[in-house]
Image 1 (cartoon, one colour):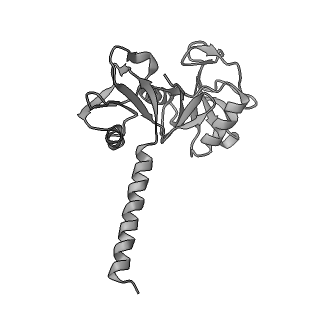
Image 2 (cartoon, one colour):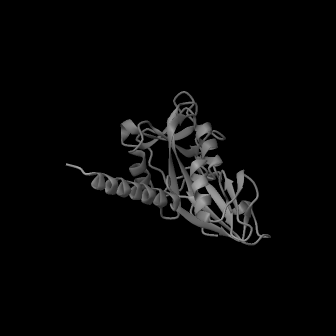
Image 3 (spheres, one colour):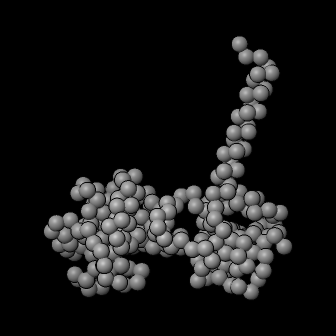
Length: 227
């Protein structure tokens, strides 16, 4: 039978567990910039005394990165941060990005887009996150992407397209021709004007061309960087 003292101790332990979990979530970040400032994508700015408080705010606002200046004690919450969009003129800034939802492999990290949408909208959503639709460049990466796609319930958009020139399949971000591919037998066949690349669930997640207007889930990719 529980006494008041045992119930009190149990409540204290539960609160400690909650605090520890919160702290672990708060620090699921990595430092990406030092003495640099992100030029845009600013969601909000606050006065805080520590990067931990800044991280808490970032979690609450579902931001993708945040900056903290220990000199001015200012916290900046951003939609995303990119190394080619920074300024090196200010001092005291350290920028961090959340890694809670991203999966790392080799020199990239990947995010599952769970909401089904068109290829163009998937590309746009990845871009907003400072990423691109995944571009598979080796058998090893293909196998890893398969392991991620197994967590989805629909086919998954990849970053390949031949919309500019029929039959010339390129990766959208740089327009480079595939150096590696894993097409299903008979694919691509351009049936009813299919110009976008996907992993097809019902055929062992092999590569298929499909209509860019189809509504599928998707996988974003961004490079790991430690500037």
